[in-house]
Image 1: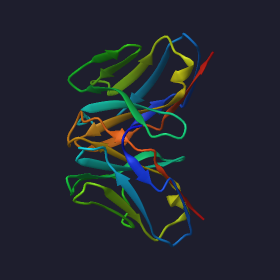
Image 2: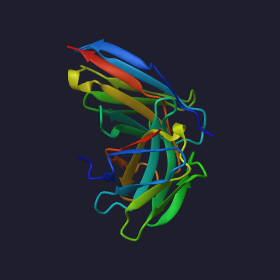
Image 3: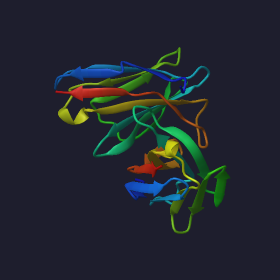
Length: 110
Length: 114
């Protein structure tokens, strides 16, 4: 089955700096890669996603890049704000099966 | 608020018992997904239903079962509970099935097995 690895497990950045979270996957059949943000006591919320036929996607301060050859994808958050502090999960999906990374706890220091 | 509701919010039970977790999807959503989130294994996909039919199966134990009813709400049944089943259980819903179909997560049910 699919194996998704996510790094780093914790990340602290100063407000205004950029944050980068990286994930790798093993199954070349995976073709959909969503990123979720989970705040304390809440369920995960989709923040951005990318399909395998696209190399990069941007939505305001958030961007995702995908390298299908190397089987890795990354989340980039620019101009971080304290409200970006949360746990972020990457996922790789094949059909209706979603495989999640182990999460990155991001802390933005004011 | 995602529009997905889950009950109960917290559940404390003993080993060997059976519990039922309930999920009501967003209005109009036909797909329901169940996930288990534990500290040591992260977020794991369990099972998906679409319009009453099972569509995909993940790492769901044989002691666990689920169903989706005609009104589209879903229940996850956990039996012969073990200490290791203690976790957060999330339900998510989406309008249909297939890729690129944004999943909206509920607030979760925290299960504690003593």
